[in-house]
Length: 108
Image (cartoon, rainbow, N blue to C red; front, side, top):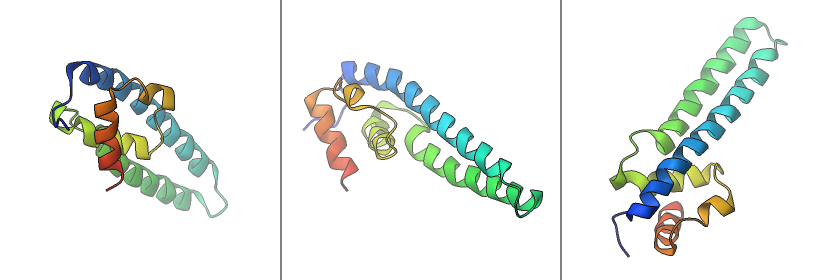
């Protein structure tokens, strides 16, 4: 199994990486809106919830989106898949070798 991502998979990764990032940010912003709107325990408590949520989501974002290089593409894709940010039809566009490599990493 090749460790280097093929050029066609790399180009697809770069395109889908942007789509997955937008989906992730949309999800986080919706979560932030919900946390910010809940003031039952006071505004400070709402602020603390939003702060903790952003801090937590920032770690998740880093694992799937920071430093997108060819050498890290499979790992980033596996983390993006764990978050459910790509559809099956989008994943099916990758070569069989790439999907196999991603599945191996995802199941570690």
